[in-house]
Image (cartoon, rainbow, N blue to C red):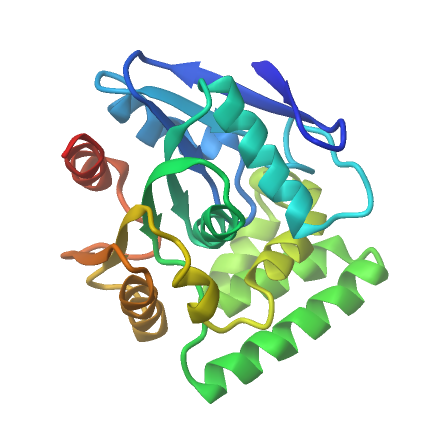
Length: 258
């Protein structure tokens, strides 16, 4: 992997695939560059694709204290490596990070977003607040296993599935990233769609959801698309929050080359 240096000196590890107009992929919670590799490989015939470890993950550094502004600088450093501008795709909390970067003035030529997990009604906002508070307490106690289990339960993973994951080799990889769950929570802020900030983003944007995803995620996608001045909404029939790369890739290629 190559390394970009962010504004505060933090090294950000990334990998390039393919040739063509640059596209940067931004992962969500508990993900690394490797998580985005299947999608990157499918896009590589048409684009120069950059995948990276967000700070605190994989081979990237993690300079304290964390702020969302530092993560925005990380993405800006990647865009500089790509030549000064790039189309950007973000998934889940990574989509929220991309929106924050665009709102802050980072040079993003086109935005594609998959299910930014904002809350759109009072009950969901209350649940987000309770989750953030509980997560903070667990991480303060270094209860990394419980923090990961909390996150998985919130996103709908069944208890028996979580129990199986805890017994598997992958659990160590997840708990190694547990502290970054607080970073994703910070990116989402109070949890609601930041409509006023989104109104200032003039970049062409596509917000995608899965036809079989939870209603709250589908509602959030529509709300974000409405708030973006140049936003459009698209639903992928049969897909969930864990979208299939082979279904998503042609949609992104069509949008980024239009």
